[in-house]
Image (cartoon, rainbow, N blue to C red; front, side, top):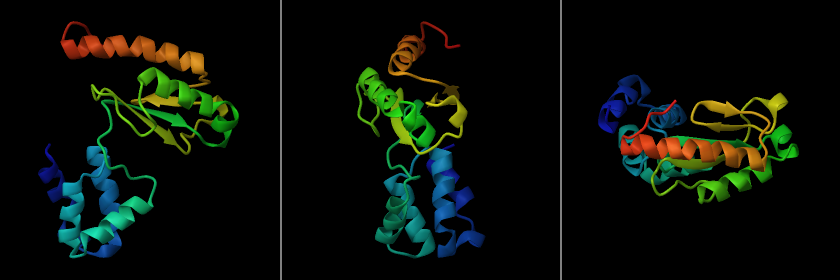
Length: 165
């Protein structure tokens, strides 16, 4: 489904009220993984408000991102339990292994890296998710091992020479 079709489903007459702005932005991000400039401009037009106001609301909240995530988004939990259990070291090791900054995306667009407030698996801290898969009790060494095993599979799948589990 392309962005235009998604927006026609989201921007319905009953939502033509500024009170729905955050809900609309959340729905767009849920559908696309991020908020594009085009989508923000369309929302501003739909709600008859300045684009700068829509941008101001979107940038105020941490939940919104403005670049497309990688095919396999990597999220490192930095909630209290994960932070205390070494989450920062895991985050730094992940950035090193992927050779990207936090908030960045690999050049092949396979992985993106985010620091998140809480994944909700505090008893398994520190936790990393890669796509929909959660990896509990991570250490810097363990995350490097996980990424090393995933990266070749991703490269083979892209080249069409292998299969992903």
